[in-house]
Image 1 (cartoon, rainbow, N blue to C red):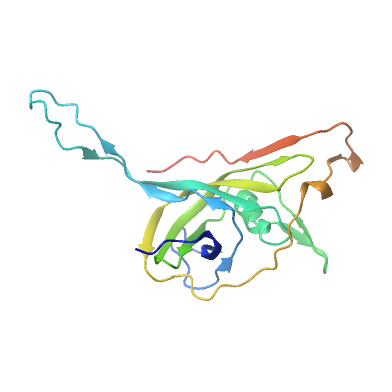
Image 2 (tube, rainbow, N blue to C red; image 1 turned 45 degrees about the horizontal axis):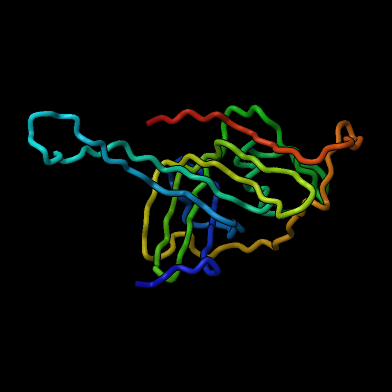
Length: 206
């Protein structure tokens, strides 16, 4: 049995036109540090009495597909996660552009995300992914990453990719050392660390 290597693992995403329908093209390879995206169907232990000491067969529970994705905060790919959290930004300028993300949108875009382990091979496509929570920590040193908590509609596993040819983005990663915290354009003093969490408080429709 082949062993998957993290050096060859890939994640590709594309925004959906129709919720829950994975696009055939338009996927972009995005950097990620770890992921717990997966589908799960627990088994419920039977509560019945009178059938002896041996347990009776368990009952299948509802299927859920969700998980967290840890991603670096960078200049390009992080925009996908901001769009998933807030919706389409208001863009101005002619390069460099200014993207303004606003909270409170009624509709959020959904994504299809494929995680690939070519050695196995295993290509898991998660359709209908909607971002429930986005959080990150600010501190003096260390790696700057964010955690995106996703709720998906389902998982489809195949031995070949369904994402096609992926678009590539240049990795331009930010670090804690280059960051600052301002309020109304003025720097805040004596801020040692901070934690930011943005939640959409999604309700599942089972």
